[in-house]
Length: 278
Image (cartoon, rainbow, N blue to C red):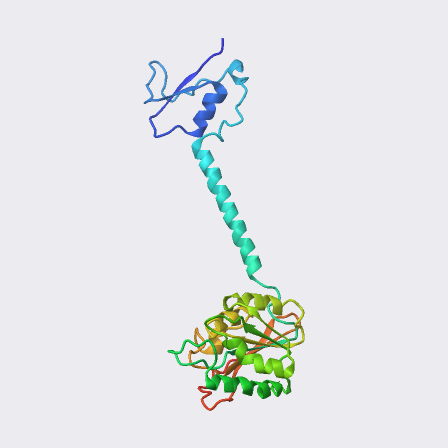
């Protein structure tokens, strides 16, 4: 006849998984009540050892795993592992290996002057239209370190009901020089521009980007520059239209120098930007 052994444990809030294994594997019955001191035997005596008959009991596959505490631990561990994998993957995807064109130059400007704050027109002000026209000769004759820096391609923010200004700013230049352009990318989607710049098709070329000033700091950072050093703060100043940022990249597409200068196209092109080279 199968022998059943009984052990007594001190009162506790829950049975431990080890006692559950003991119950299932060796047939122990564990009482949830204070242990009683047996007469004629020391309270510290070792518990009875299982016999060969009880040792042959087939173990349950879920002896420990079925316990709620063990299940909860495994669940937490699995969730933590998934979160770590997601974080590592996101970090890898967020770090472009070649943020700029190899041996290329990227020029970044803000769109030209807009109408007064109380004017909801999506176009340019008269001063803005004048600047857009002056950009034709400005960029046709632009030089950096003694060499021509005339753009060979231009990016402009996609037109919207609220603003068509970036494309209107560079449209005369693009048409005058027969310059290919891309004005299909939304203002918030500037990372797409960064991805295209590092894709190989702009290697060795000069690219002009005309964007809304609110996103230019993040665009600069995405290309490896320090927007605070270039702009003298966290934002492109609201009423400044006459600055141009020059980014030069090495043979690996890594930023090697960044400069900001005043265009001096209009009479009110001031103040001077911070002097910053990296």
